[in-house]
Length: 348
Image (tube, rainbow, N blue to C red; front, side):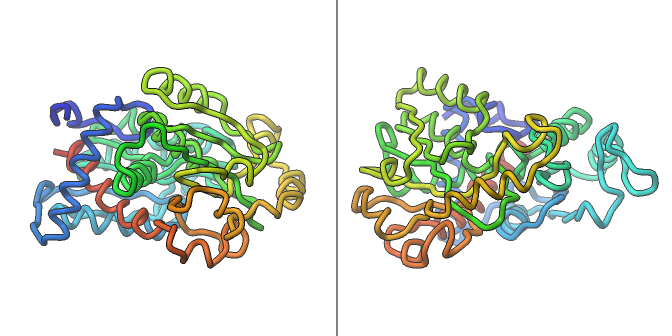
């Protein structure tokens, strides 16, 4: 466990910007806070502090786990709907009397409170891959208080912490365990890639054997994949790309079937989002569903994971998500405890 003072005042934008030892410390704190919450031992670690939650996108788990978690730590969270205020915008994306430059918003909120958390991807960024991450980093550049990424178009580090926390609870030592991060079909084509990229990124710190499964055309960010491989050179584990869902699932310890979009058909790889081309790719792969037959190819005690909300009947069948191998609600609960740990450490 590293000294907790190394976290003070830091941003939490990508798990890849933290060391393995720092991630392990966050998890240790999360497990302790979870136990204390179960035993009704309250912590007032952030007594009198305020946090601002800025949402450009909808949310159930993220908003409520942050609000509840901050209250449990003794602080107060302010929810800001980006459509209901002067929408924070980066230079070049501004509209008169509709937006306010991020540089100004960040400096104002820094005078009012102790932390800023932001969710932004997809439509609010014009579906330009990387722009959501750019927004959050612009907030961090100008804010004098810590900034937390509640999901952008590249990373979902808070979900990743909950994912790895759940795996450690259920499996113990993760070294050599096989995790399959798989694409799955959804009729909704407007999907970010943050969850699968962060799931692989966090797993790569713990020596897991990572299999990325997807149909041709659904490739993820090469930069993130290279970072995953760098971690595996340090910490062990293997990485493989497979274009057959059933082949990928064989002997898996963890499966994470989740829909994501097509980077090659959105900017900057394409001049503009080509939803027709994306739709055709989706429709050609409707058979990529996690059902009981596919799950049986994995180990008998395989963990079925999903960040939620899951598109039932498309990504996964009811029998799987509500079945004995599913840990999705443990995973959702761990969002609360993992985020409390992050907030307690960086906002101390």
